[in-house]
Image 1: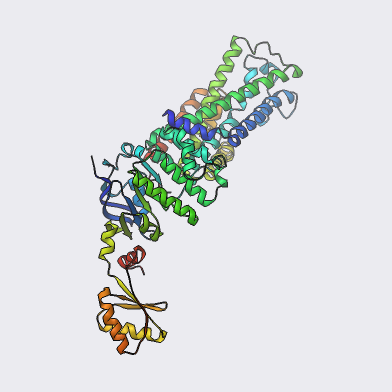
Image 2: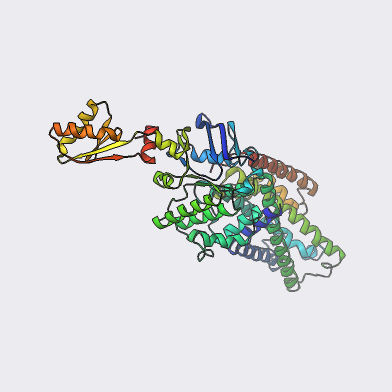
Amino acid sequence: MTSTAISVRDLSKKYDNRLAVSHINFEVPLGTVCGFVGPNGSGKTTTMRMLLGLITPTTGEGHILGEPIEHPEKYLSRVGAMIEGPAFYPALSGHENLMVLAKLGGFPIERVQILLEKVGLGDRGKSKYKTYSLGMKQRLGIAAALLPEPKLLMLDEPTNGLDPEGILEIRALLRDLANEGTTVFVSSHLLSELEIISDHIVMLRKGEVVFAGPIGDLMAKQQPTIIAKSLDHLDLKKIVEIAQASGHHAVIRNDSVHILAAMDWAPELNKAAFNAGITLAQLAPQLPNLEETFFEMTGDK
Amino acid sequence: MFNVVSAELRKLRRPTLFLGTMAAVVFFSGLFSALLFLLIDSPQGNSDRGQVVGREVLGLATGGVQGFSSTGGFLGIIALCVFAAQTAQEYTYGTLRNLLIRQPGRLRILIGKLIAMKIFAFVMIVVAAIIGIGTSVVLAPGANVNTDLWFTSDGIEAIFTSFVNVTISVVGFGIIGMVLGLLLRSPISAISFGVLWLLIIENLLIAVRGSLQNWLPGAQLNAIASGGTLDLAYKNALTVGGIYVGIGAIVAAILFVRRDVAN
């Protein structure tokens, strides 16, 4: 039995002359929550479509739950997915929309109401889909993805349009599913969201993987930052000069200086600042979060 | 396959679509048959394009289904619209990706959809037949049309033959609609193109060059519904119409199976 839920090697997709996904390689271990990160147009949705058999790769190979992606019929009955937002028939109710998919997939129709309850649509299941708010549509999309009791759940921006309470609920739901053994492969532009729930990260930029692996490994690779604030704003430039003189990269952001340096250099900075007549109001370490790490690695900011 | 048909029927039985279509079928099949008898003495004619169908013709064994047969082309247009809309909307709503994730057998989806829509069309034809023949039975005495032969063995055979012909024609129109839906991927474009072609462009072409009637798809399917016309033999219509529908269906199936679903 395979230990990976998703495995891709040299996977590419070319549209006319544009390479949407370029020779990507990554693996997602079974039972993990894997965040799929990348700016708009980086190839996330195209990759997901290839993994679901919706589009044919130009080169490369992939396996889902041990089965090759050329034969989606061998694994899709164990996969739940919501790609590029929810898509349903506006004139049918949420309940009827799920019934269509349940019938199509041969799933027990009793699951429809259970799933509507699970995503908080129990009392609105009979309303037409076109009357739903964006958040409700998103919840229905997640319910549809859960119809097959999936071993692998692939969600594209599942928290889009959800209010903070809804985001918390979906986060808890995904974590619960992972605890029950479901592998969750989730893309989101809300990197802080993914940082909280993910064990693994696959980072895409311009169709290429820039990182794939455990989130801990990614963070460990990043240099810690020292945040320094002075009582007088005019001193911020002097702090930057002190840091640069010691060979550290430093920039002013808002009312503080961000210096790429380990915390054990902080006493030296404090001393140098004192000697320069600067009174520091704050000197604190800051470990990079996923968002900063992402921009650091992709050089997009 | 049963799952696909069952899922598709769920969509087709929604009240606005099902009852709306059936209401149109009841109204127009009743109207077509009623006009045959109500305008029987009108100098402008009582049938398609000002033709006169007299008491002698309506009194034959085939007289009872005359109205129903002439509804065939109209039923075909309805089928074309329904089949085109049901197919193309999967692209515009983005629901095709849901369908393919739950049922990756693309040909199975296509055939399942076609079977479900054929069932829908069949119900439509049954309703049209009941209303068309019923209206004829009710209005014939008032128009002094003799109905003695309508329900003899020859009359029953005429009803059966007409029903089969209308069904072949309507399914043919429907498949053309489905092909247009798959090719154009937009209900509005598919329906507009189909209706414009069948109701206007074909008639203009035939008006300019009459011999084109033997080759244009709408003319063939209309002729099949009527069991052949004076200008267009039934066998010829069945052959040419079958070729159109067959080639269209094969092209659409290949496209559907091979094309990336990128929306």
